[in-house]
Image: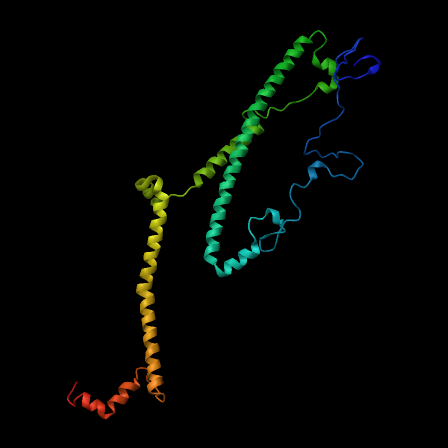
Length: 285
């Protein structure tokens, strides 16, 4: 501040006279988040403790399904998933398992990132609080003749700084809880597949390719076995019955075998004809 109460951030080149360094004090108070007092008394604004932290449009319906989730925050289309579950239900089950694994993986990543962030804040805030306390003691010693720092600032000097970085502080407890939760999730995650371990031990870096080839060959053999043991005999029986019925209707259109399913009109007609006697003698068994 120079003469005539002029505030200058820098001194001009042709400056002359008397100036002094000053520090401006902003007349404001920082209200806590959970304060029960309004920001402006007499206005219609809500207290900070009553501010809604979640979207009020999202709700749980009568059967326990969340509704009105914005489309930009949806992971899957429930309408398409509904049609898919009707036609390709096995694929929907596998996709749901993959999504569960993906969400579990992202949850562990989120916990790890949050823990690292709080660890950094904890370390910096701990040292900053220690330096502030040391500076305050030094200022009180330097200003001891004038009554210390509080003699200069008055009531505004009474500032309480909570030691949340102490071993029993809120930041330390939260950090310990996040660390324990991260360890618990890591212990409950992971699958053990003996086949993967066997291929990695035998083929090394080519384990993925060899596993794919082995799986393809195994599935092909399974399909061939199923076709050879089940489908081929069934198809053979169906074709044989179809051919017999076609021949019967072609040569004996008036034959009625509804009462006896084992009745064969061809053999019956041959047995009653003279040609049958010529082919088979009387004493033939």
